Image (cartoon, one colour):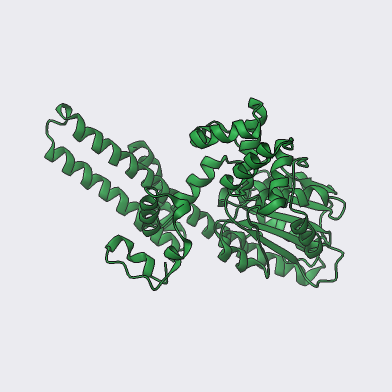
Length: 420
C-alpha cells in the first residue's frame, strides 16, 4: 500500500506542475487525496482505540475488511487520475499535430501512406452456432452498406442487457462482410487503455510508418484516425462494450467511406453516437425455443421432453448467454431436457458457477451480472438487496415503475422519485 503511494504521489505532483488543470483532473486528484487522508485518519483512530488489537480477532477482522475496501477505492481514484492526465496529454499532442498539419496543407496536398490492404483485425472467426438474429443482421447490412445511397458515415448503435448477444451480432456482421470493406477493425472500448492498445495494433497491422522509434501509443491513435479520413478506403470499425462515450472522441473518424458499429449496455450512450439505434432483446416465443434447440443440437421427440425444453427456456428468460451455458452443460452431461430441468431447479447457481466464458466472449453469466450489479446506484442496490428476499417472478413490474407510489419507508422512497 505504502509502496504504491510512494510511486503514485510523485507522479501526481508532476501532473499538477506540468499539465493543464482541467476540472476532471482536479476532481480526480481531490478524490485520491481525500481517500488517502481518510485512510490515515481511520488507521490512527483504530490503533488508538484498540491498543491490544492482537488480542481481539473480531476488531482486527473488521479493520482488515475496511482496509481492503479503502485500498480498492484508492486504486480506483489513482486510475482515474492517470486516465485524466493521459487525456490532457493526448489533447495537447492533438492540437500540436493539427497545427503542424495545417501548415503542411498550405504547402502541398496530403498523401495517404501506402499500407497493407486489405486489413482485417477481428478477434474471432465466424461463429457457426450463431442463430436467430436474421432481422437484426439484415438491418446492419442495409444500414452500413458502404455502397449504399446514404450520404456520410454510417453508424449503428446496439444496446441491451449484458449477455444478450450484442458482441456476437457485431462479430457475425464483421466476419461475413469482409468482401465489402478494405479495413475492418475490432476495438474493445471499455477503457482508454484498451482503445490505445487496439489503435496501436491496427497501426502496426496496416503498416503505418512511425515518426520515430520512440513514438508513443497516443500518437498511433491520431495516425490511425487521420489515415482513415484521408485514405478514401472503405472501412468498418466496431467499438465494443462502450462505457464512456467521451473516450471515443480521440479516434472517431469522419470519412464518408466509413461504417461504425457501437455496442453498449446504455441506451443513452447508444443514442449519443448514432441516429440508428438497435435495442437487442432476449429471445421469445417459438423462435427463441428453436434457437435453444439449435444450441443444444437436439430436438425433443416426446411431449414430456418438449414441455421440459420450453419450461427450461422460460426459466432462462431467453437470455442468449444463459442458453449457451446451459446447452454446453446438457451436452457435456448427456442429459435429456427433462433430466436437466430437474437438476436446474435444484442447482442453477452451481451450474453457472462451473460454466466458463464462451470462446468468443470475455465473460460468463456470473461475471456479466457482477459487473452490472456493481454499477448500480446506492438506492438501486438497496432495492435489489431487498428484492432478493422475495419471489421475483411474483413481483409485478408496475410496482417498481409507478412513480405515484408513496412509501413511508425511507429506503424505498426512491420508488416515488421520478429521477431515479
